[in-house]
Image (cartoon, rainbow, N blue to C red; front, side, top):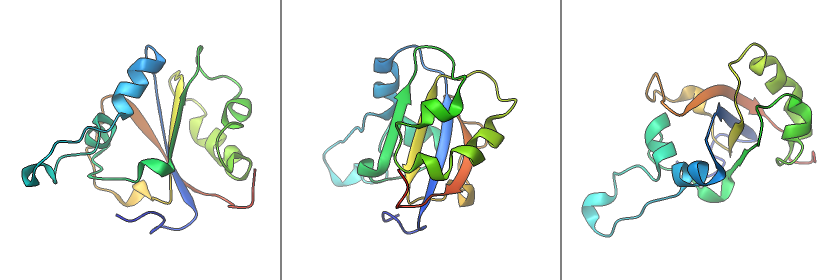
Length: 134
């Protein structure tokens, strides 16, 4: 997978994490030297969602202190969010409480045949975004 091979889209997952350090550990890349490790997933997140590799520079995530209520306000801090927040709000409607967003830009996860039941996050969908949006 190369960055932006899927265009101006963002794939979004939600989850619940005990702490920011718990989320950081889930997303933290692990590198092992040697040729036999090239096929290992990049992080616990990658392993959980069935993604062999992604460009860390295009991943954004945040954990909030309380379950997310005002979706638009919580998404404000993410890149280009004004162009996809309304669509995400529709997808989130009725979802179990969560306190974390994980966004990966330039990748369409809806085409991925990853694990059917990730343990830490729930895939909301892939949404187009406007690169000129704030």
